[in-house]
Every structure is written in C-alpha cells, then in structure tokens.
Length: 345
Ligand code: UT7
Image (cartoon, rainbow, N blue to C red; front, side):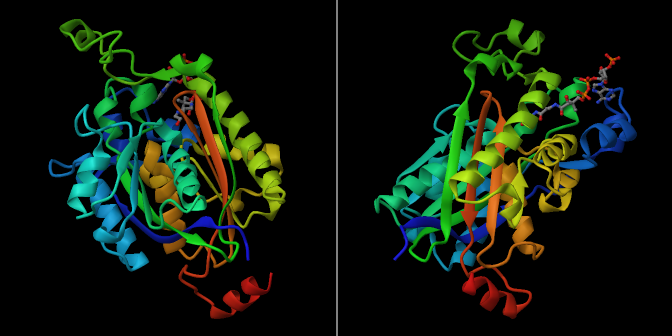
C-alpha cells in the first residue's frame, strides 16, 4: 500500500461579476491595452461588487468544492484559508468561513501573499499524512483590489479579485502531494510590500496622504526573482517526485505575467502549452491564482485521472512554494478509455 497522501477530491471557484478591462484602465491611468497585453498578457480582471466580501467569496467557492466532494460543512475536519486581504484585521477570514459553512472544526488563515495557497496545500498535506485530519478544505481568496492604488499604473493593471477552493482527503493509491518545496528570502521583502498600516507605521492621516496603505512593488526585481524561482522550483519538485519537468502532464504556474511563464518555459526547455494559463481573464489574483487555474483546468478537461501536476507560486516575502500533485480517478473524464490507460501506468 502506498504512503498516505492528501489528494484532491473536490474543487470550486468564485469570480466576482464586475469586469475591469484594459480599456477601462486606459480611462483611469496613462496606459494602453497594447502595453498591458504585450508586457503581461492580461486583458481583463475581476473586481468585487458591493455584495462580495472576502468571506462570502471563499464560502461560495467552498460550497462548490464540497458539493464535488460529496460532503457537507459538518464533515470538514480542518479549514485553511490562504488570504492577505481579510474582511477585518482580526480575526482572519477562516473563522467566518467555518461558521458560514456550518462546520465545527479548527480553522486558520495563512497570510502568505501569492504563495499562500501552495503553502496551505502543503500544510494540509502534513495533517493528512500524520492521520490527524481526514477532510481538509483549502481555500485561496483575495479582494486584493482593496490594497491597490488605482493611480499607480505599474501595479493597478496586474491584480484582480477571486476565490477558489479544494477539498483534500487521504489516499493510499499513490495519488496526492508527491513532493513540495517552500522557500522565503526575506532580504527581498521590500520589493513587494504595503509600507503603512502595520505596527511600524500605523494608520494615520499621513500614511493615507502618502498612499502607504497600498501595495508598492519593484516590478523588475520581482520579475527576475519570479523567473528564477518558477524554473528552479519546478525542477526541484519534479526531481523530488522522481520525474523531470517534461514528465509533468500539466504545469499550473502562479498567474502573474505571461512573460514570466514564457521565460521559465524557455529556461526549462518546455513547450508553453504544458503551462495552463488563464491570467488573460483574471490577472494576478494572489492566493486565489493557482487554485483558480487548477479548477478551470479541471473544468476545461485539461486534467485527466492520474495526471501529475506541477504547481509553483511566488510573491510577497519574497516567497515561493511548489508541489507536484498526482490526481486520483475522480476528475471528469472526457474519454473513459483514458482512465484505463492512466491506471495501467
Ligand atoms: O505575485 C507577484 C506579483 N508581481 C509580479 O509578478 C510583477 C513582476 N513584474 C512585472 O510583471 C513587470 O515588471 C511589470 C509588468 C510590472 C512591468 O513591466 P516591465 O517590462 O518590467 O516594465 P518597466 O518597469 O521596466 O517599465 C518600462 C516602462 C517605464 O517607463 P520609462 O521609465 O521607460 O519611461 C514605466 O514607467 O513602462 C512604463 N510603464 C507603463 N507604461 C504604460 C509601467 N507601467 C505601465 C503601464 N502602461 N501600465
């Protein structure tokens, strides 16, 4: 019998209805659709409506994920919500999500920026491997627009709001988290940060006047870090899983910038079509980015039973997190023969 691992048995997403297109941004800051598309690949992103909250978006995605898994809120043993844009400074959204879902389990928020969901997936895997918990809900949700300065053209074009969730359960048939790598280089922290509103520089009129409550980013430094980390982490997690990156059936990179993905693909000598991309529709949704792409890849029929999927996130910290996850048999099968072929591997 294989080692017990956390594998994905349910998935769901929620994207707000409001669309912010490149044409809309042209009316807000000095930019052009062509510049944004050429430099990033992003065409539009979603923004929360008046009725969306961090909790409501997470709950919507979670309800769908639980439905796919055939579970109800009361069946969940642990909830981890990856989020850096909470409804309130305290508590984080995980406790509200737990209450709204009718669950009576432990819940915590992991504030890891864009790497937060993969950090949460790996954390959940530890609890499942040890046998501590059985049904674990891992959500990635951001209303990151609240921390965006819509007068700063170098950041406001990049980000959007979204939520996505998966349900994990123990498997003993080899499916699940095969390998992972977590990393942090805090020496680079101030390349992507919010300088005001914390204990060093608490909210004040001056903080607001200086727009220090918004994200500040050194785009070129983050770009270089991202290309380096995306390629090296994909290499490392593949090797740990006994694979080469070309053996991966699909790669779900953090959806930050198409040029970052292209550069990493080139470094690894992999065709671009191995990478799932949906950033043209949503931009960078931070902690929601990888789960949202995973859910859409499954819904688009890009994921088959037994597929080995590489995921790598990077972002504030600066931090990174990668994993290889082998899917079980519970993904929708377009061609049932694929199931028999996959099972024989
Ligand atoms: O989860 C991680 C999140 N962060 C990231 O992934 C960010 C990684 N970095 C990037 O994606 C890119 O660095 C950006 C898309 C942010 C910027 O692209 P770039 O090719 O690195 O541009 P740049 O910063 O070198 O700027 C080139 C020029 C500058 O003008 P000058 O100084 O050459 O006159 C900028 O002022 O482009 C200008 N620029 C813009 N022009 C039109 C910056 N933003 C815009 C804009 N529209 N939105």
